[in-house]
Structure formats: structure tokens, C-alpha cells
Length: 246
Image (cartoon, rainbow, N blue to C red):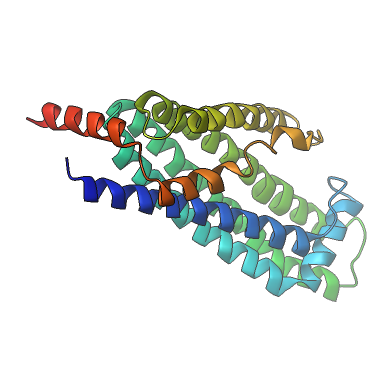
């Protein structure tokens, strides 16, 4: 086994987890600041969103840019997880890789709606923010139909991949089982939230469904950077992979 290679893979994987955590958190803050309040779907709700976007166009652009960079991070993270966990079960790792690639693509497409909202919102303001106009109809499609629905859909693909990744981490024991078990349990709650949100976007879900996962990517990322893979298990799966290739 090339222990130095495994250590480097673990460090890169940890750094990717931390990067995606930081980028996702930053995007959420920037997006919330740019769109303002969105308590109501359609009607006055979308008018408020467009007024806020027009006032914070630069912030909206930065939010979209950070999200696109985050999509690259997701692809890198998925690739590193595949390299590490194909030793445990290559078929399942390939499925998880596919889910996260779809996640990244859906997230990129959803940002097209947000990007198109910027000039539309500016035109809406220049027109005097008319009520019950075509601006609101198109704005609702771009924001709720493309941007927000795309985001909710990307979360479902994220959950489908994450359930497999963390199950493989649990099976392969490359990290302590309390850590992979935490990831599995937390993602299960997020999966429930994602399915419910897609079924009925108007439902306000309790933040408790998301809280257990929020610090997980940061924690496992720092763990992998500092501690790396569990040595005995890393050696076992590497040896098994070598035998398969022989």
C-alpha cells in the first residue's frame, strides 16, 4: 500500500469537504441578502424579491458566481470520494458519483434562472414596479420555477448520493463509525425534508431537520485533514483492491 498516497488523498478529500461547506454557507448568506424576504409565493412576494434583487444586483451576481464555483467543488469532492470508496464497493461508488454529477448539473441550470432575474428585476424597477404585470409572471417562473425548484431538486440528488457515500464510509471504516453514522442519520433527515419540499414548496419545514447535517461536512473535512483515514482499514481496503487488480 502506498501510505503517502492514501494520506494525500485523505487530505485532499478533507479539503474538498471544507471547501464545499464554506462555499455552500457563503452562497446561502449572499443569496438570502440579495433576495430579501420571500414569505409569499407569487403576487407581492415575487415583487419584493425582484425589488430586492434590483437593489442588490452585484450581490446576486456574486452569489451565483460562488454557487458555480461550489459546483466545481462538488464534482471534485465526488471524484475524490469515488477514488477512496471504490475500494469498498465500486458499483455503489459509481452510482453515488453519478448522483452528485447530476446534482452539480442541476444546480448550474438552476442558476440560469437567478442570472436571468437580474436584468428582469432592473427592468421591473425602471417600469415603475407595476402590479399584476408580465414581470411578476416571468419572475415567478424564473425564481420559483427554475432557481428555487432547481435548488430543491439538486438537494434530492445530493441526498441520494450522500446516503451511498456515507454508507460506504461506514462499511469500509475509513473514518470512525460514529462519524459516518452521524452523516447517514443527518442526511436521512435532509432527504425527508427534500422530498416534502419538492412535493409542496409552500411547506415551512422545521430547521431541526437540517441542523444535524450543517456542521458535518466541516467536521469530517477537518478530521480527514488532521487524522486521515483509519490506518488499519485503509490498509485492508487497499490490499483488497490490489488483489482484485492482480
